[in-house]
Amino acid sequence: MAIKGSLNSNFRKVLAVCPPPALKQTQPGTLLSQKKYTLSGSWAAQKARERQKEERIKTGVKLTGFFQVMDHKTGWEGMEPIKRTELVDVDGIPLLKNTADNWQRLWAFKARPDDLLICTYPKAGTTWIQEIVSMIQHRGDPQKCDQAPIHQRIPFIDLFPPKPFPHGLDEAEVMPSPRTLKSHLPVPLLPPSFWEQNCKIIYVARNAKDNAVSYFHFHRMNKGMPEPGNWDEFLENFLMGKIAWGSWFDHVRGWWEAKERYQILYLFYEDMKEQQEKDRKYNSGSQMDPAREIRKVAQFLGLQLPDQVVNQIVQHTMFENMKVNPMTNYSSIPSFIFDQTVSTFMRKGTVGDWKEHFTAAQSEWFDDACLRLLGDSSLVFRTEL
Ligand code: PPS
Image (cartoon, rainbow, N blue to C red):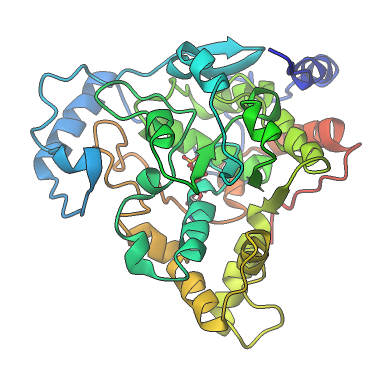
């Protein structure tokens, strides 16, 4: 492959001089909020809970395409059980095994000039920006967005779930133009056709601490992800970049640098959240620069939207509305894969939840790593609002 991931090795050097102070201790230490998180019991207990949950489930979700024929209660019998996957390195970057197994096909993916790519590190606010983009594309008409769950409207090209689930790449290939696609790939692993075609790309970055917390809970509830271990173990792997899609530091920095050369709109979760709160308080329109982040996206897509449409998008993409919307809250994914009794997909949607999880030592270690790995870039993250 032409482009190599180089930042991982820098990170290893930094860790050599900056070892984790508290992550190895057996006692988790004093959390900033005095809360502790552990994994919720054994595999057998989880399976039993899943079976009970499936008995209870009433889906009521309007599904289309493949998911329409899926019965959440009985339609999965005879299927291979979903197993927690392992990670496989591709050019030094750990990916889910199924993604690595399909690597040649993914690398050869043919982007089209009018593709729009939404790219993020996992749990940075992908679904939120997807829904904003989808609403912009449908000129603020929620009924058009409600025709299918977000993962069907915007295929995830680097996810290869086990059969019989559809692969995002297959869906993308047959999709008419203009396509909007989702990816979590870091810059060195993005299929080269996206650069060659100079596609527009929207990138959302989220501060490392909240991003790590969200990713930890996602590992707990998504039975297709690798075992997260306990919080301390997960956090160490997160900092070392030993998790799916690799190092957060490499990811946010790689895309930050790429935006100098390509058509990339680089957004921050924290800015979007700040704006969401302002828009909620003032009910949009009455404060300076309403819906600033949504307008940025519309402008990037070359669209001028009337205030009324912007307002509709603001309301539709409020956290509490997306949380109860079956087209955005991933309730269309069967509970034996996404067990939302363990943690909901739309979990908290805040800035600063890391304080409920990090010890003081862990927080210092993250700050130090950010300083060492991002300090010489102009990239600055806010960890509270
Ligand atoms: S994924 O699996 O990578 O696509 O997940 P992703 O969508 O990137 O991240 C999920 C987190 O984003 C939060 N979220 C939101 N926050 C605020 N407002 C809105 N509308 C919104 N939609 C999603 C979601 O709650 C997850 O963060 P946490 O911190 O876990 O709550």
